[in-house]
Length: 346
Image 1 (cartoon, helix red, strand yellow):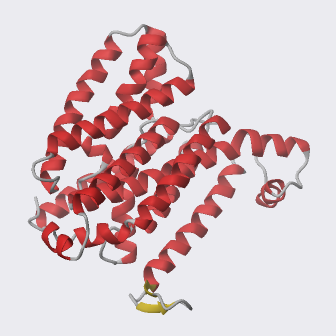
Image 2 (spheres, one colour):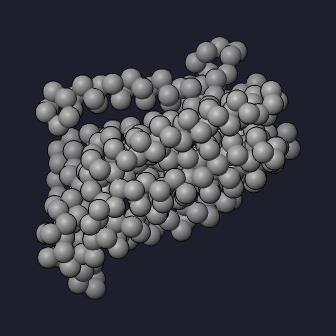
Image 3 (cartoon, helix red, strand yellow):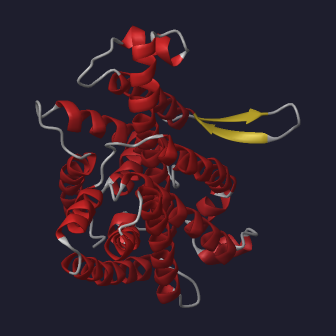
């Protein structure tokens, strides 16, 4: 596929540069994600043909199919789509802000921070699922704030953000281990299941809060995408071009933390999607810049496909989706580190 940039002029006189390859990649990812979602909805102990799934989604299925699709399987798929999209976009933001391919929520400790918030609720109060989700959201926000404050020195830059995040991640991981040792066996088992990252048992109570946050944050991020792209040329150049660097950086970091924490609250700490989605999207588009929309679509596609693999690839044994993304993401991380070292960047 050949990279082609075209200028599109609107009737109002506004000129927009269009990257044809990136747009094509986004459209193909959307189609692949929708196909995978329909296949996933039809997968399970009671398989439903694709045609029947489509009829049920438009309200023409029989009562049994309506119940299975709309009450049991559709919420799970929607949580997977929204969580994957949030992780993909959050990972792209952190990698662009830190200007480092390792600047991912997985590496910076945001997932561990959200886990700490959830564990506090589980261990100290045996809270409900909604309370655990709220605790995870608060834990992620507090961790993100701590990283930003500790990394601040006349701004937040590159490797300092990554190194501070790694340090905070180690501390929070130790705290999580301590909380597990202080919990009783029932709460500990519940916590370990949640920490794996899973879409099992997800219903509409998890869909609507995640959808509301995503609907607010995604447009906010895309509106500020131009400033983020300018910042990749350096703060001095960005200031000269009229970008309010620290304001844009803080706004986008808060959005990235909220996206990551909300996805973790809904699906648990699903690992490596935030790290791999932006990298894979960039390799497909071959386009400079943060590739925010391709990363969002890639994250959604990765999590839905990983959920299908977790249900079907191991026979009768169903694995939590976090196990699948962890294995695949771990292999990708090793490859990325080797590539960065060979290129002399680490």
